[in-house]
Amino acid sequence: MCETCGCDDPTAAPRLTSFPADAGEAGRSGHDHPHEHPPADADADADDRTLRLEQRVLAKNDDLARRTREWLAARNVLAVNLMSSPGSGKTTLLERTVRGLAEGWPLAVVEGDQESVRDAERIRAGGIPVVQINTGRGCHLDADMVDRALRVLEPPEDAVVFVENVGNLVCPALFDLGEGARVVLTSVTEGEDKPLKYPHMFAQADLVLLTKCDLVPFLAVDVDRSIGLIRRINPAADVLTLSALHLPAGSAGADAEPGLSAWYAWLRARRPRTDARRRTGA
Amino acid sequence: MHELAITQSVVDAIVERTGPARVNAVRLVIGRLSGVVPESIRFCFDLVTADTPLAGAALTIDEPAGRARCRRCGAEFVADDVLVLCGCGCADVAVDGGDDLRIASVGLVPAAEAS
Image (spheres, each protein chain N blue to C red):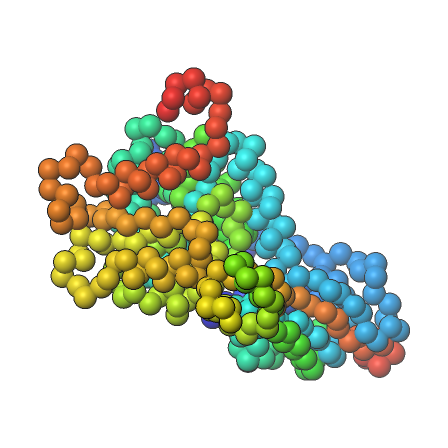
């Protein structure tokens, strides 16, 4: 039996594991249980054979996402939902991003994977508080999981919270998490046609990041054509090219990877303004 | 395979409304541009409804086509795919329908027959 809450199934998914920034050892682990009971139905009439519902299937998720959005807005927190196929470089970009931004901004991370706390450990090595969600058989994060993770994280005011979704170009597209920005990554090693094959994901992105661009000289990929296909699916999205691990070819001597600088600038423009930050210019 | 989670949401939402009343029919609306595959929902439905008041219910799925409008020439047309091109050759097309994902109605078994 679970010692935390007395329930019967300590392996129930999703599981949350918290890694506070200053924890000495593997963080506290737990899971909670929505013990919800159906309300007595006011509309149903047992003799009425057809009950019209006209209810959105994802109404519950979307309502919770709306409440999360309000909760984040009240704290001036920007939540960024990072989505891509497995191996596109979400965690590597996050490792690099928290190194690049942690001195200036309060940061926190929610990691989503089916199993393991590997990604959370990678991020925590950078001194950033992380909550790992393990979805078990689940193929995406939903608003309830993220709500629970945020309540464990308790991000400070003005924070930026990165939510790394489960690596999957299909399912996460459908679930609003209450985020303030949706960022889709696609790496140059995946080929040019991912937007055509997975249009739902790309169609709802605010920003598409073309990652691993340091590898372009070794591949038969045409970056301009890749960007053109992204724009064909989503003419409104911003598109940036970057390399989170190495400087791209031709930028030797540059102080910083220009794509990373553009990514930081994009995030900066998305952060809600506060009087305090306007004064300091941070 | 988000259809499993979607099907679970359908069942949860219905049971929340109808409580323990037995349900023998469910009608869903899944637009062709919704990103949800009706066949997968059918596949999951019996599995997810087992041991619930929906067990054995007949599932009907309406699949309305998408509607799209070209932002350049203003033409409106039917779209069964997110990747649509207007007849004028333009790809800047606004999709404004066919993304429904709704529970339209359920059929309830009268209490007298449910025993």
